[in-house]
Image (cartoon, rainbow, N blue to C red):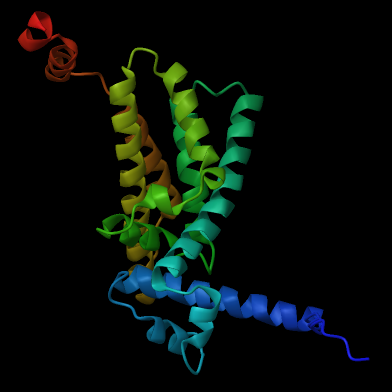
Length: 245
């Protein structure tokens, strides 16, 4: 008697699974590089597939579905790796009781991202991040899951006790501005380094990164001006309408 159940599909061999993983990784790396060099909207799925050695873009659509999903996959893959590095750095700060050292906390922000500049397949990631930041329809925080930006949130939590005299409103504004400046500065370092490399000219990346850390530390620890304090007081003071309500 014939059975009506469906025949189970054979499992892919380890070699086939590895090949599929390598193919997906190549598509991600190729898309990241093209997006970084030319911008998100200037690159089509067809161009990415062709650059990655695919005959058509069906593989891209199979793995990711859309350009938006592809951008999100690149973001999440990079951020997941960076979050591990950032949390490791925070653990070292805690072990040496530097969790209230503002420069140490800034280092925890900078060095995981800066380490991408030192790798062959990651040296376009910061330019990719800058391209995402500039895109009007992509919200960076919405494109990354909460479980892969824990390091960013932990650094912010330690910044408060490290800067106790800075009002939380200003701390948040400075912190978010510092992260944006970090993305664009490292993207610029990538461009300069790549351009000089093509001309056989050196670029002192270590010095540039350490100087960037100094700058961000200075921005976070800068005294609050009289003008800003007046704006804070004015914003917190009750209005005439509030008093008569």
